[in-house]
Each structure stands twice: as C-alpha cells, then as structure tokens.
Length: 312
Image: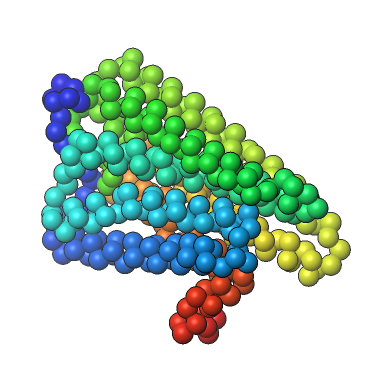
C-alpha cells in the first residue's frame, strides 16, 4: 500500500487473542459503557430539570458530561464489536471519523476543564463579582469556545494526518484510531515532521491551559487558607475539590500516555495506558462529581424518589 487512497481498512490492536478473553473484554467494556451512560445521563437530566442547578458551575458540568458521553461512545462500542466478532478491522473512513471524534471530544473536554478552573477561581476569589463575570451569555460563549477550539483542533489534525501517504502497513498500535498512532504509518519524512509540528503547537497551547489551571488553584488555595473558620475553609475547598480530582485524573493519565519513554512501549502497556485516559475518566467523572455534591444528590432524589438516591 503506497498511500492512504489505496488503503481500505486499518487493523486495531486487540485486547485478547483467545475467544474467552475476547468475550470477557466485551462484557467488561459493556459494563463500563453502561455505567458511563447512566452516570452522565443522570447528571445531564438532573441539571436540565432542576432550576436550582441552573448556575454557571452546573452548566459547565452538563457540558462536561456531554463530552464524556461523546468521548467514550467514540471508542468503546467499536472495540466491543470487534471483540464480539473476533476481528480487528476498521474501515479507512471509519478510522478517520473515529480519530476526528475522539480528538474533538478529548480536546474540548480539556479546554472546558480550563474554563471550569476559571469558574472556581471567580467563585472563591471574587465572589462579589461572580454574577457579573460569569453571566449566562458569558458562560455560553466560554463553553462554545471550548467546543469550537476542540473542533478546530480535531479538524486540522485529522485533515493533515489522513492526507499523508501511508506506507508502513495498516496495523495501528492502539485499540482505537488515534492520530499519533496513524502518523507512525507515514512514509514521508517532510509531511511527518509537519504533522508533528502541528501536534507540538497544540501541545504548547495545552501546556498554557495547564499553567492557567495551576495558577488558578494557587490563587484559590491562597484565599481559602486565609479563611479564619474551619467550616468556611471546608465549604470553600469542597466546591472545587471535585474539579481538582477530575483535572488531576485527566492530566495524569494523559501524561502517562504521551510522555512515557519509547523504550518501555509495548502492546499490552499501550492498551492499559490508553484505557486509563480514554475510558476511565468518562466513566468515573460522574461518580467524582456526585459523591460530595449535596445539591446534585437532592436533585436526583427529586427526579427518582424511589431509588438508591433516597437512602444516601
């Protein structure tokens, strides 16, 4: 195969070779996927239906749940289908679409987490100006900017990557189509360097977002530690604890995936690491946000009065 136009499919990395383990993988991913659908769906429904949750923080949380649903729905169903059918194949167009959608959702989520850090900064450090700085129109614009930035990032990388000549085979060292893994199949050094340069530019922008998040929390901690009462300190810190945990999980798994030394890269490790940053966060984010959030629990009790939420 000399280029992408003559390639009809890619072969994804399989979690298992034996039939028993393939079925185990299917049922495991099905359970995780259903849990993610249920958790994020409950958060979206609660926020949409309860007017008490129509605030900037919960508006951004609703957007985060939508992105989590999109992210996990892009990768997990295809992997489940491949295990069930005992195949590794994905069509060329399907691979391009999967690569685009995953990068779109994962990038948008990172930018949205940056916006949510600003929301927590204003709520803790400038509470008197919270309504002014984060009005409904401003929140919509900020969320739209996160989604739009993710879309533009995914469009540029996908168009650039799938326009490259691919001559290093069609085996992708990943259980889904990921742009960096597709780039490894390129046979043009100049085009490859251009694509890598684009990735580095995006990485620089992502690092700027990371610095912004860190600086926001530095200011938050400085203000919280000056609160005289322990009760006030606990209340202020608890409002941003969930976001801090989600950001830490998102960034730490991503860093392990993209910053591990090439010398320790092998198939099983790639599968485990990719599972950590592409599947785990969308599944556990609803749990993280609902565990210590009394308002969200109260909204769920109102919507589902005869469920487990009534006894929590």
